[in-house]
Structure formats: C-alpha cells, structure tokens
Image 1 (cartoon, rainbow, N blue to C red):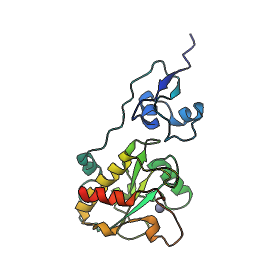
Image 2: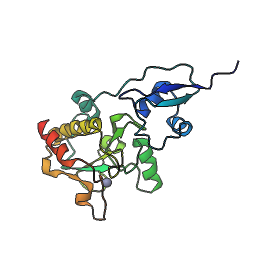
Image 3: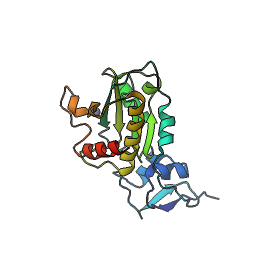
Image 4: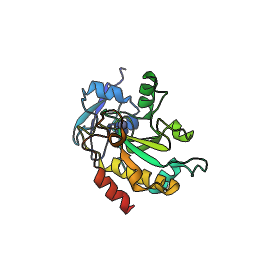
Amino acid sequence: MKPPAGIYHIVGRGQTLYRIAKTYNVDIQEIIRVNKITDPTQIGVGRQLFIPGVKAPLPVEAYRPISQEAVEKLVGPKYRSSCWRYITLHHSATLEGNAECFDKNHRSRRMGGFFYHFVIGNGTFSGDGEIEVGWRWRKQQEVNRPSDIQICLVGNFNKETVSSVQLDALVKLISVLRKQYGIPLRKIRKHKDIADKFTECPGNNFPFYKFLTELKKN
Ligand SMILES: [Zn+2]
C-alpha cells in the first residue's frame, strides 16, 4: 500500500511555523518549500498548510510566554569572575533564523563564530520568544567590545515589528542580567547608537522606548 502523501493542517491562533514543524516532526524547510511560503513569520490563522508524509492532523500547542524562573535558569547563576557592564541590542535583519544558523553564517564569514550571547526567536526556526543561549555566554567570552552583552532578536525590524512575546522575553532576559551584574538602564543601547560604521540595527521599528518602559516596571 502506498503511504499517504500528507495532510492539511489549519493554522490556529498562536501557532508558529516552528511549533507546527516540531509537532509533526517534519523539516521546516520542506514545509516552507511545498507551501511556497515567502515570509515564515506571516503564516496567518486559518491558512491550510500541506504537511508532507503525515497521516493525521495533530493539535499544535500555541506559544506561551516564558516565565521569569525559566529565564533565570537559562542565564545561569552569576559568574563571579565576569564583569558585564553594557548590553547591546541587535536584530538579525533576516526574516527567519536561530542561533545555529547565525553561528554557521558567522563562521563562514570568518567572524570566529556566533557573534551574540543570546538570540530571541520569532517562531520561524526557533519558538516565538524562545531564548537561546550562545556558547560565548557559557564560556563568558566577550564578542568585540569589552564587558558588553550582545542580544539578537530574530527578524528584520526595518520591515516587521517585534512580536509581543519576543519583547516580553527580551524584557525578562535583561531584567535577570541587570539584577546579576548591576547594569544601569543607560548602559543598554541599540547597536546603531555605538556602531563605528553605518547601521540601522536593530531596525527602525524596534520599540526602544516601549522596551525601556516595560523594563522599568519589571
Ligand atoms: Zn547589530
């Protein structure tokens, strides 16, 4: 008997492409290809997605905001020998991605590998608001500026906006880091504020003041 070619999954509220691919255990690139998806962040509630090689539709969990405790666990205890004094915010300037893709990309560009300490996903190749910890954080290794923690949000915020889940994860992550290392608000900056070359990073739509307001509440 020939195996079924696949099923249609109807996208529900709060479901991301990442979560759908993970639930069905199908390669995300394959879903993007067969459904001719041009923007993986905009799959739209109610859209029918063809899932190849699957026999029956499955319930897909909607994203849930990460808890403060979970963020503390990810960051780990305070490293006593480290002296982190700044935080710089970046966007990936790509529609999709995760820590693994950026690490590969940064290696191929001879940047010595992964240029960030943390990456916050947008629901494409990692969960919406999912925090990935880079190897440089685990090794407590600086990137290119001394004492400066580098955080990257997946997305191109010249074209898109930061999702509320992503912003929430960023606020929680920075709250934990500020508490551990006593980093004042004025030492949190956008990449473009300190770049020696022209850059729009983290994008014109990055809601910096909204972010600061949320951070003050936390
Ligand atoms: Zn940047």
